[in-house]
Image (tube, rainbow, N blue to C red; front, side, top):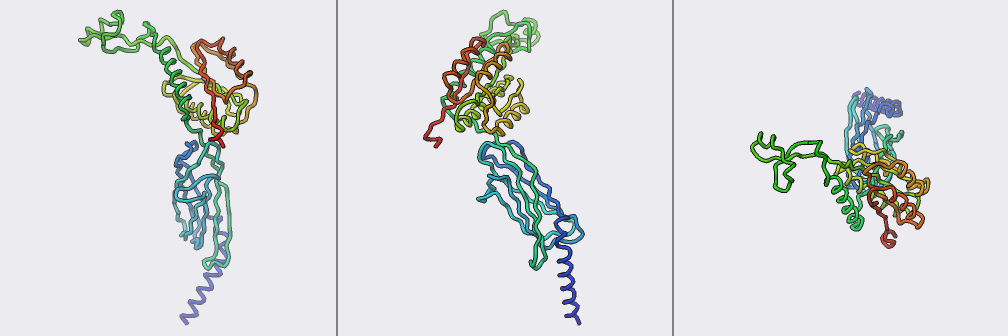
Length: 340
């Protein structure tokens, strides 16, 4: 009698499983999150997920595949796939996390997941899938070319000199202790008497430094344009460190940004560069004409390009005539052997 009851219960469970297993995936919901939308090449990106069973019945057989964006490498694996096999009780969740990297500049579009449910004996299974609606943009690397960095460092030094060498005596920002190197006329006798030692006025600057970072995308190979992007990033990060506002102009799909600085400003620029397909839209001459139209007082120009043609160099002569200062021209030369 007991044996018959057990057999009957087993049959009932099998029938129930066959009846409800196809519906199981409808009650499963995946919540996921990437910890960033903008990453460095090779930076570890954290993915976290939670799979909810919103059903009053358990999911007895669940095979769960997650694919990170194409090109991603999951830490400890050779590909972009993670697999989970589990049993999920009613109204329970399965939480998990992983780290992965994206190797180079570009946009890595949505991953995908597959849910395979079935009866507990494995006679039959049902598969559902959906895209993960999230993109991650990888910004260019920093430039490591010693010649470029040397030229850039010298020019940034010139900007600092121009900015700090002259002060406006009318605009006093504060006071600092007298070192003996300041002229006597800068001593504030009233404030010195108050604090009991010689103090000098700390004045504001007469030069309101600003810059334009100009990217030429009309010519050059893919490798040269990629290096140009690295130079742009390096220039802008140095301007950020000096808190010098800068405008970004290009003649391609890297777009344009109005003058500004700060995290939001540079993040938007890195997004633009990361998403670029290296497409040029109009000539370098036209880009220089725009620079001249939008020129400002005390503006420094960083011209970034693949090695220029003779015609492009001629266009620079016109901008030099309108600029107060010498142009900083940074050309992205690529060693052919390294490129191959």
